[in-house]
Length: 111
Image (cartoon, rainbow, N blue to C red; front, side):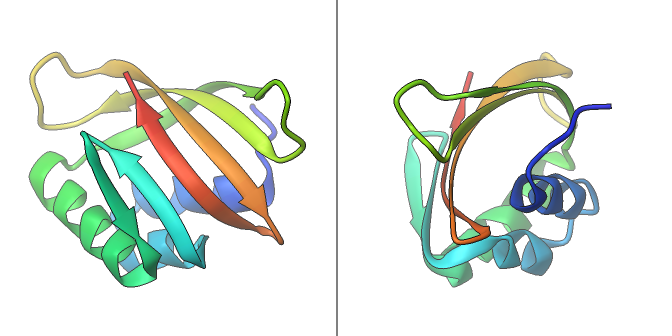
């Protein structure tokens, strides 16, 4: 089992439960998410993004590993196998998290 920081663990659990409000709650109020070429700002926008993703893809993620991002004190790269209703499923994606004050300040999802 991979030991994830608490905010990242909360995000993974909420995301796998397809619970958009819990996903948003893992983020700081002014957080950002970069995914599929779009930027989502603030908890309301992040909740809408999570709801759309759950409805569209029904994806779940299984973390495969975690590394610190060089040059940061609070940056983590999580590699995860993502399965859902999309071509090529499952795929491995990188989730780059910046943490701050026990919450997620930003997330960038990368292929």
